[in-house]
Length: 259
Ligand SMILES: NC(=O)c1ccc[n+]([C@@H]2O[C@H](COP(=O)([O-])OP(=O)(O)OC[C@H]3O[C@@H](n4cnc5c(N)ncnc54)[C@H](OP(=O)(O)O)[C@@H]3O)[C@@H](O)[C@H]2O)c1
Image (cartoon, rainbow, N blue to C red; front, top):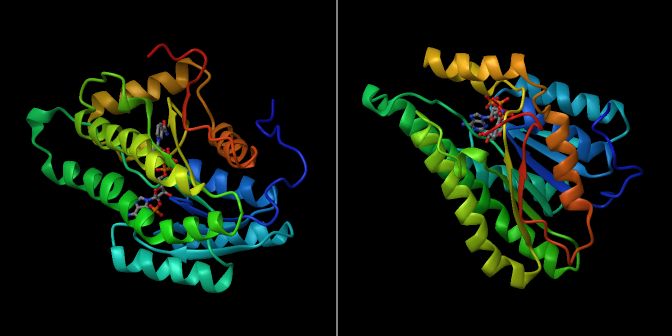
């Protein structure tokens, strides 16, 4: 059954920015937001993937621009935000989604992996927020809907062995969402986070711990896990509801996933 439940083009007039859009959840969401009428700017490091995505959107009659950027580079993200403003206008829908999961036992002391997760899942997320909050507040002030939606994880709240650093970064994102709402909600910017369970993407491919890789691969084999399109539809719905409605913390699990 298709994940696509929204009909028509309810996001016409919206300017969306999606980070981590070269694969998985980000790619599916950027594509779906464009189908639903938004102009989209896609951010990630793999330029060839972004070019293919934007070409497909344009072939379908939509508007999309590729902005190859490493979101851990604050200056580069600021430059990307200026390009969005120049080419599409201020962003009013920011899907702050790029993230990496490198689970391992803490006693293995894989400090480079700890740092990569902190650099991307915390600093990268903050760089995107720093670059685009001015866009969002300007859009809200102009009377448009404005959305800051970040990708957290069920790891933010569940106790998953060996996930300590990843879970810590996602707990940061979930708590950040609650706090940002206090300030930005008053300015009519909706702040939300989506906390998925297992989604079938490239994410586990980066994990170097064999037990953790097996755990995720087994889950994908055993149960009907989520697909990126399921997350894309949910994010689109969060953005399509009326401006005074803020779906703020959405946990989304495969029905058969126990944890
Ligand atoms: N899959 C799951 O089960 C699951 C569950 C809960 C939460 N999540 C979260 O969902 C988000 C998306 O992950 P995914 O599952 O779709 O995995 P994915 O396919 O590996 O996507 C990760 C994306 O982040 C981008 N990225 C990585 N490093 C980057 C950097 N330095 N600068 C810019 N972009 C960067 C990657 O593109 P480039 O390599 O081209 O830069 C890619 O587009 C992550 O935040 C993840 O933690 C996933």
